[in-house]
Each structure stands twice: as structure tokens, then as C-alpha cells.
Image (cartoon, rainbow, N blue to C red; front, side):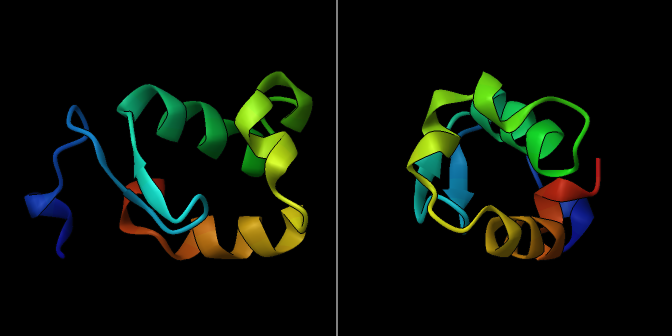
Length: 66
């Protein structure tokens, strides 16, 4: 999927959570995983056992290049 085909306002599949998530959760998670916000500020991230691996996965996702 190219960047021009991405709809940042629609729900979409997240490879970190391995399910479809809302744009708000995507943004909040992205901000946590790139160390802008604390990981603890997003309860859904508490369920992720390997945050470093989640960071790698998120970084490769086309939705992470805002």
C-alpha cells in the first residue's frame, strides 16, 4: 500500500496489535512507540509484552510515517 492510498481517518489493520484499530489508537500508540508519549499512557500497549519489537513493527508500518 502506498502512502497516497492510506486513509488516516479510517480504521485500519495494525501489525503491532494484529487487529483493526481506530485512527486515534494508531496515533496514540505511534506517539508512545516513538517515545513522544509514555507507553503507560495507552492501556492497550500494556498488553504488548515486547515493546522494543512493537517499536520495530510500528516503524515499518506505512501509517507510522505521518
